[in-house]
Image 1 (cartoon, rainbow, N blue to C red):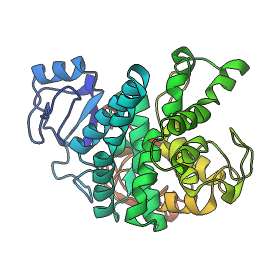
Image 2 (cartoon, rainbow, N blue to C red):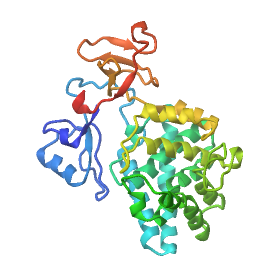
Image 3 (cartoon, rainbow, N blue to C red):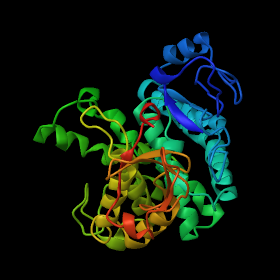
Image 4 (spheres, rainbow, N blue to C red):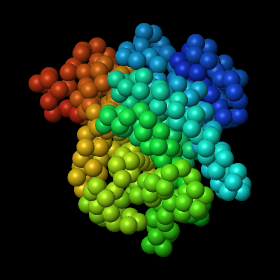
Length: 357
């Protein structure tokens, strides 16, 4: 199974995963359906960038886990709930917004249940990203990654709810930052960056003034840009003075941001984002949190295609980190990038788009 960009979708392709849109309760397309010109146009109309399909060259997909770690329906329910929260805060009274925020509990419980059930499965960032507005899918991805880190660290099920809720709400302060600054395609001025850096305090104030959850929820949200060496913001906290949940959300937040398309830059490959996180261990990020994150994240999904530094194209057969086992396109040779002496100097240059594979 592979992801096909919407412009590469063709009539007759077989859908590999249900496709949901926020305006409908039922799936727009269900697994096993064949694409038609009408379905392709409807996906384009709804702004969907693509669809998972079965690979015609490999009808039996080489995947360890055919089911995504978070079902498409649960992901869509979460995105819709987050969208309602942000719009309620922006356009409704505080009382109405607080009521909507409390409705996140069922989404949080379902996310925790799904990740706990699949706790042995690695997370690939491509599988948890969604097709909606960046703010909503970023909040969703950060929550999923944070829960996964929390489970790996052994945080009890009864305490994961707060971590997940804080992760979902970690960026609500950005609602109070001018949208033209949030979406500016170029480099921010010093004054604009100062405005952006206020969003953790805006979020803290909103949570505190509206008495949402326990008192430490505001603190956790406020401190998700703090760094363990004291160089973060807004308070310059250090080490264990930063709540564990803030330290977890910090790692999840940066990883998802680096691997996302933004107006001011193209996304980094997951491998580069992971190297950045590991390089910041002990300075920007908590060492134990980074260890848990590295143990949980999958860089190259089994069945995906990559370009090697020697210009060979290959299909990933294992979910090892930077040096998986791959099948070389054309020759069909099976190469263990970690152990094969002829490939010790060969690395994965980048993931390939389906049209390039």
